[in-house]
Length: 222
Image (tube, rainbow, N blue to C red; front, side, top):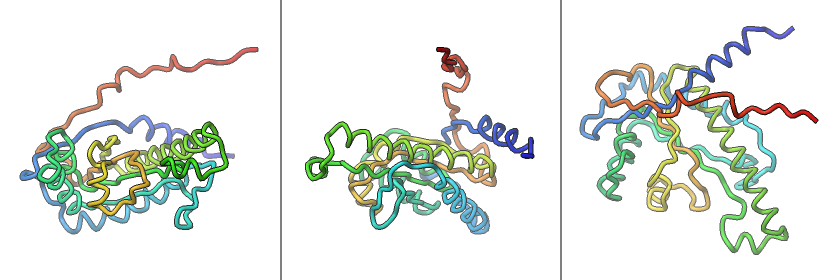
């Protein structure tokens, strides 16, 4: 018999996951102590590996890797450098640099479209509608991977925020971080370790949490 506590635990984690933007000025960021960084590094890496058990329909087979997603991990020091680059080199004045400055780690999850340009489309024997459907499968699979990651981080008591990324997904930042240009940014996941949660940062909760319902469920009768 299955353990009845397992579904309850999974449900509790899903409901506990929440959107919260954590921001601070670059000069005011609080460095992650070495012992905290080391302790959480393995947790984050394992969470990413576990998230990779998301389903995918078509093997992408880029560099011999079947999954249609990639995870580029920036630990605290690299996230700070990215924050500075966004502000000083790219002139970003929105929340991006402040999000990067406040996080303990940052995971950029990309997906790999199969028909990302006209050359790839024209080289394929499939029609455009089939190409579009195949890429939609890759994108849906990568989205499932991101949700898995958010839930694993939540289970470990880590704050997390899924951002579309803004300039983090632009060609300048991809070049700066060494991310292949054919990848597309799906999620910039900002992570806050439990030990780093304090009142020194600005916190902005998601605006849609209280608007949720179950009215989108329809039971089909024939």
